[in-house]
Image 1 (cartoon, one colour):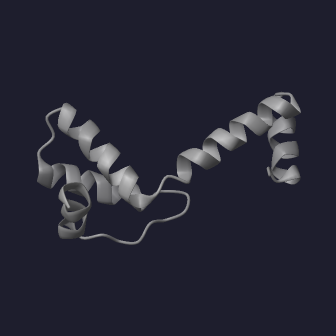
Image 2: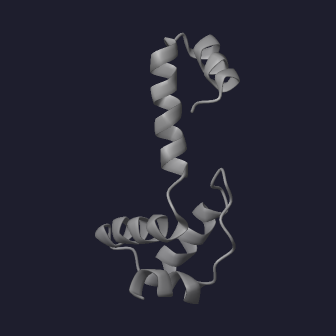
Image 3: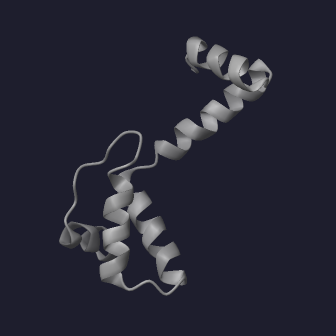
Length: 86
C-alpha cells in the first residue's frame, strides 16, 4: 500500500498521474528495500566487473551503505568480505 500523502506529493510535484506516481514510488521503495547482504553482493560484483580491487570495493560499498535511505548498520571490511564470500 502506497502512502496516499506521499503519492499526492509526487503527483503534485511531477505532473505524473496517480497511477504513474504509485508505480514510481513502488519501484523506489523496492530498490531501497533490498536487503543489505544482497546490496553488498550486487555492488561488489558490479565493482569487480570494472576492475575495482577488493579493498577499494569494500570502502566504496561501506560509504554507499551509510547513505542509503534506511541506513544499514556499519559493517567492517571483514563483515563485508563474509557477506560476499561466506
